[in-house]
Image 1: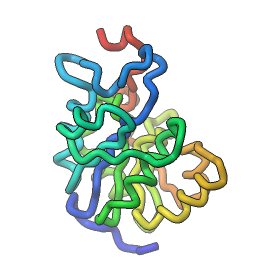
Image 2 (image 1 turned 90 degrees about the vertical axis):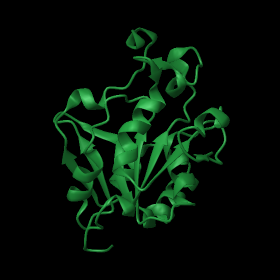
Image 3 (image 1 turned 120 degrees about the vertical axis):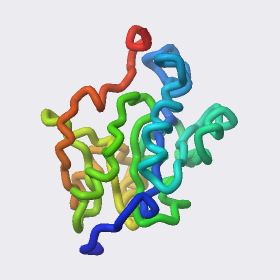
Image 4 (image 1 turned 90 degrees about the horizontal axis):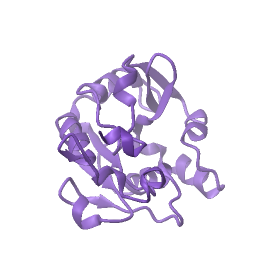
Length: 191
């Protein structure tokens, strides 16, 4: 692993994870649901875009709609294999040394989360946000050269983001803003 920290947003691709089934919201494509007057994904994209060189959207449906926010990357694993499937698909195409991933249903993304995780990465393989109480594994910055490790992990049938991060040199970065990581998971959360 490189021992120096890549500088600046030009070194980072952002990935918004929008590939879920939406089971908690009646099967709806949750990041496209409106929250405070705009789709959740629009809010996340607006916060993330200034922090990265390029935005990608991981989505398995409604690709035409998601293209309004960035190029769409569909995972190739069957049956909604989870966020790691979207991450590995993005790692197949990124040209930057770093990838930042976050969920498309987290409307309170901090405006400096990418720089804070970059500062905490140092020589590690990945940096993950910690809200002061627990690790937030879907808010993570990782080196693009982690792809072979992730591919092996997925090929073994495992799907846990937390489990995969345990196999890497993962650094936790205390963001300390629990509300920043609150996902919209229930229809009542939209009101």
